[in-house]
Every structure is written in C-alpha cells, then in structure tokens.
Length: 114
Length: 116
Image 1 (spheres, rainbow over the protein chains, first blue to last red):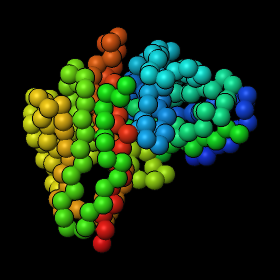
Image 2: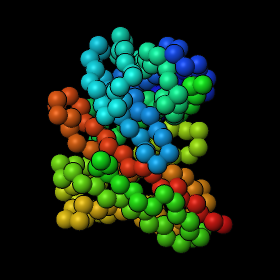
Image 3: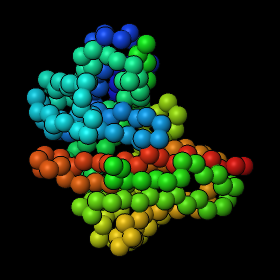
C-alpha cells in the first residue's frame, strides 16, 4: 500500500510567520504535488515536483514555495503566512507509469492563520 | 475559469437506490478521467477511472459513463449504501505543457448522503 504522510494534521500560525508543511511518501514515486482544498473550489494545484530539485508552478503558486531535496520528501513553504492561506493542504504522490494516472493523497493539514 | 465542474454541491439518496453524480468539463485535451472519494479528516482516495477512448467502465457497484461529445461524465453507484456517504470529486487528466508529468484538474465536489 502506498503511504503518504503529512507532518501535522492541524496547525495554527500567526500572520507573517514562515510555515513549513512536510510530506513524505514511501513508494519511490517521482511525482509529488501540493494542493489546497477550499469549500466550493475543490482541490487546486499549488506546485508539483517531477524529480529531486525539480519543480513547476501549478494554478495558484503565489505566496508559496516548495523544496524537494530527497525523492521521498516534498515541502511546502509559506514565506509569510496570511489569513487567506487558511485552508486544508493536501499532498499527493504519483508514479509516472501508474496505470490510472492516479495520485495518492496524504490525510491533509488543516492550517489556520490568525 | 473552472475547467471541471460539479454543479450539484450535495445529493441525498435512500439506501439501496441509485446515486448519480455528474461532472462536466470544458477542455477537450483531457484524455483520462477519475473519481475520488473523500471522508472527513482523510485525504481523497481513488475510486474508478475511464479513458477517453471508452464510454463506460464498471467496478462492482460503481460505473462511470463518459459522453465525449457532451463533455460530460457521471458516476453511478448501485445499490447505494450508508458507507458511501462522502464527498466525491471528479478529476480530469492531461499532460502538463512541459511534458513533465500528468496533471489532475479537480471539480468542486459533491457531498453524497445515503440515508438508511
């Protein structure tokens, strides 16, 4: 079974703080993704990475950066957290050779910025 | 501009009846479609998929239908069970413009409630 874990289930941070969200997968997948989920908007792609140190912007990258130093780990960084970044953050991994192109998701991190 | 739309935020059905969840898309480059199921406090899990070269795919109680000309797909659950109560996301796949990976574009989700 693919396992994707995220460092925190719930996080409360203050406006202006630097926030790190960590994601680890155990299936040796090349591709990893960060999404945010908001009511009525579904899942929106922030960034993805297709290899170590390789990254591409998704649909809503503003205010975020990412880091992938090791294949199994993909970090999302909020350089200066703002209240409009309060959301559910979901990490996913994917094998480029996967039969259904499916992505495997972690349990999510509920981030509140006050 | 949402490329994948689920116009029904919620749906309630009686246990044992059919649940039909709908999804529309606008990008004709999408060539693979997936349905995910999400329980509260958990990440989405893959349910069923369909390639654009097919019009139907079945897996047990779950069937996905694709109408390419209408850019419409639907998920049928028969018979519906209380454990099926969850948020269902439709997703459409296309290769990133850089060619580096396959992107999933998600709809906004439909909350299905199956009443006992």
